[in-house]
Image 1 (tube, rainbow, N blue to C red):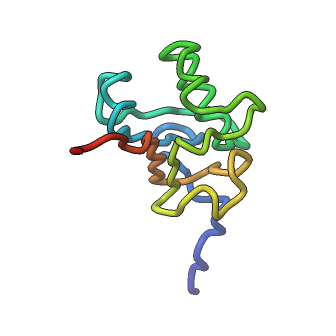
Image 2 (image 1 turned 180 degrees about the horizontal axis):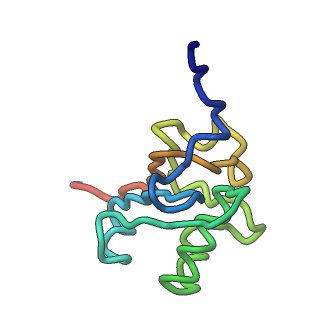
Image 3 (image 1 turned 180 degrees about the vertical axis):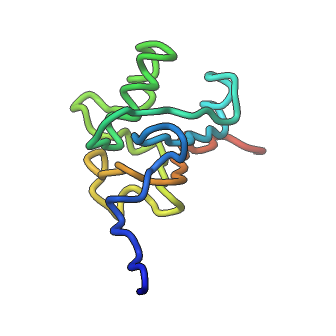
Length: 119
């Protein structure tokens, strides 16, 4: 009697945590200095979880000022803010509405482009 592999939906997303989605957010450049850490986990007990939900959780944690770093005046992702989900540029997916529910290991990297330089 051979045992069949479980369906993807039967595999827990965070072993030992009873489900949900934990996303590791890594920061670079100016944003790292503003937040004060290199990376931090963000946990959601239930889904669906979109990129926008992650950014809003970060605003709740670190202050409304971050909203100006993430979004433009229309509520869209600010083009100066670079976001990569599992190494893929967010602009090549569903943007802020990209579903990141159930990822075992997902890194959302937020970086403001470097400016200036030697003249």
